[in-house]
Amino acid sequence: MPSLTQSELIKRAEKIREYQKLPPTSSERLHINRGRQLMYELLKDVFGDPLIAPSKLYSGDWEMLFTNSGVDSLMNAILLQQQAVQQKTVDEQQRKVELVLLKLATYTTNQVKAMLLDTGTDFLAMKNPGDMSSEGIVRRLENDIGKGPTPPPNQAPFTWQVILEQQALAGLRAWVAYEINVLEYQINSAPQKDEKDKINFEFVVLKNKLSYLKQVLRILPE
Image (cartoon, rainbow, N blue to C red; front, side, top):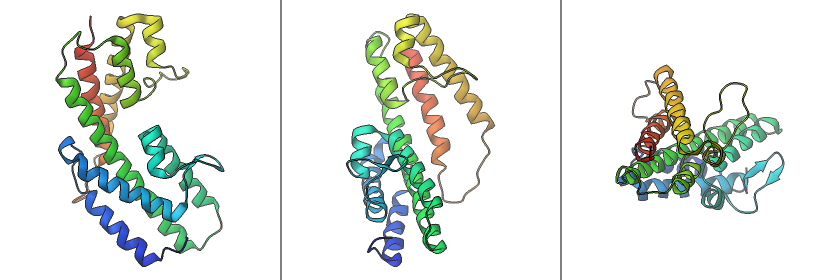
């Protein structure tokens, strides 16, 4: 760990945990984003710049990675950093502290993702069928949900854009409906976590993603 002392790290982490108590709604956007900034500043002070591939650093800090590449790229960087911590030779106590910090970062990032989906759902709820072009809807899906739907077993990933080009609006509607069914299954089969005073942001992401896609399906032309 760089010059940051363990006591200072714990003090800063405790401040971040206060922000993690906020529900991931658009009304808490400013406060949640402040917690995100504090979290990513702490990651930079402890780990330096984020990994974007094994042994390959991003040419910018964690906050810049979030701004330029989005939540999913940030989550991938956290996962790569966890793997790096588990593999390197360090004091075991230091390893535990770093892994706890990365767990907090995952928690914050899921909180941010859930909040962004809530904001996006509110935006779509104000739209009527025909208000947005099919290309505009695809761009929002790519930015807010991901490049494509969850591929069926043994099928290679594909993008929303390819679906629109090859299967037109009927295909896009069908795949949005498929993704809704996948999410409903995941939500119904998810284990219930009973953690007092702690929001399960990973579960909220699933529910908010479901609400978002239902709004997409509603505004897609027949």
